[in-house]
Image (cartoon, rainbow, N blue to C red; front, side):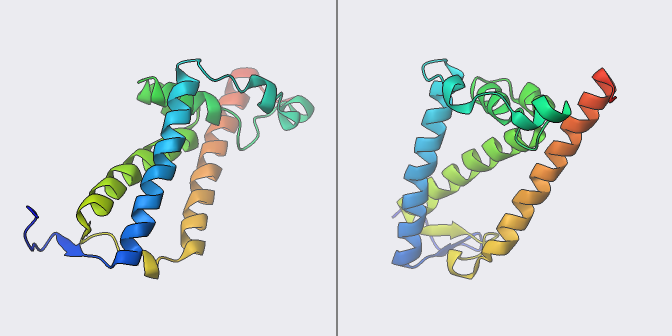
Amino acid sequence: MFLLPSKYFYKIETAERIVWIVWFFVSLGIMTFLCLLAADIVNIDGLVGTCGFKERYGLACPGCGITTSCKLFFSGHIVRAFYVQPAGAALCLAIVASWILACITGAFGVQLWIIPPVRIWDGWKIILVMLIIFAFGWAVSLIKTVCTKGYE
């Protein structure tokens, strides 16, 4: 192996390596789907439909704009993706970054020193961070809606 012992990497257990390999393929599938969506090869308009929250209240729901943001992100318009829906672009960025980490970790069996082992991750903290990101994205969408249209 060409990676020597380092203060930046540490060797991981086989079970942890399997988790990263599985995540590599799952995230690769997600990114492939989003790239196909961005290239208009896949059309989900019939599945998603119209947002009931937006129709009823005239305001964006927490998920409004995520699909558009993901399409923009994977078609190369990253700044526009953050403008449309920051949570969607942040989600895409997290998927790409974790895919890169999964590629390195799964292939070489080493992990960056800054990332704790998977076995000690707290699922509730990850969910809490995701909720905060989506709340921030929703707040930005609401502010844009109110500033552009006004709220009756």
